[in-house]
Length: 155
Image (cartoon, rainbow, N blue to C red):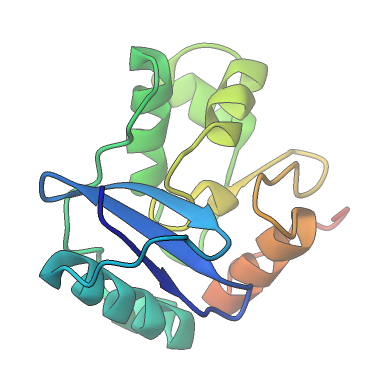
């Protein structure tokens, strides 16, 4: 599977493509680098997003997580509907997709395409909640600040 890495303000990130779809975004530098047209364009979009998230527009390529249950995919699809610069609680998302706040949190934590499937926009009622990125909660706070999103008061 072709992979392409990029430098970002939160560290190196690696995109993986399969059959014309982005299937993962991982922290760290990928071992093999392949400059496919889609991966180059996705890298360029991310560079723009890190400069100005609201001006970057929607991600222009299909996202197809390489794994996940039907429930997890339903949660991940709902994450994509949260606008740049806004947050939603685990509880509010659970009301939309069904299940509990805990089950939403577990699905969010298994998101294989963070940032592009914006799991950083989900917060706890009492603070930021968790984040699976390499920098953990600090990355989540940084991403929300970049977007101009409200940070929960207890975070």
